[in-house]
Image (cartoon, rainbow, N blue to C red; front, side, top):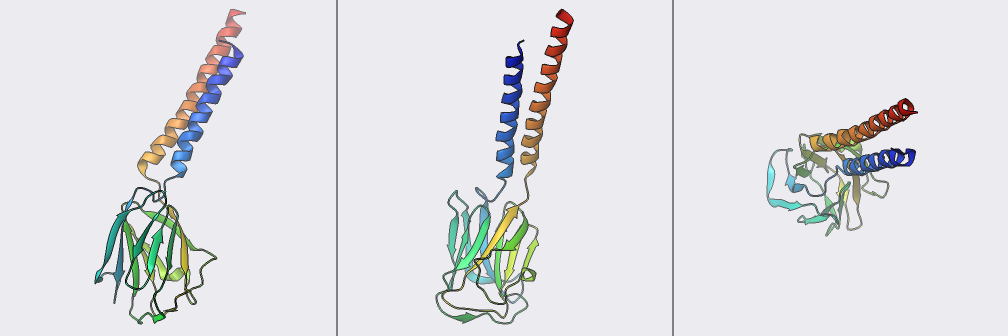
Length: 186
């Protein structure tokens, strides 16, 4: 085999690995079924009539809650569109719970947020639930809270990554064997 064919196979394996890796990097929320619930006075009791379920599409999805809108994309959750100024009652938990088939591993507050008094300690992840507590906070029609979220990769993601690495290893091994054969023949 010529050197250019060996390099072509190696390059093809590296490209395949990057394609599989890109798929792995996209282990976000797209395609996941998500349920948005308003809960109070604790993180368990669902506020009757305030539950919505949908699948997150490529362009995201939005849930109209009674007083605001929850929008979810692959890596962000935002709360905006409050219909009138409101003060959340000072229950132990007065907020929104997002339940998904996938799991979130990380979250942060986007700098575009303007909800006074909101901090990371008001967010918890329990199992497949992202809990956002608005307890005691006040909002008006221009208030916005945006969260950046990241998903825990699913086992299939790791399998794809290992397959890509294996392809690169196989290509390198074949290349080394071909070089050894050429040396032996000369």
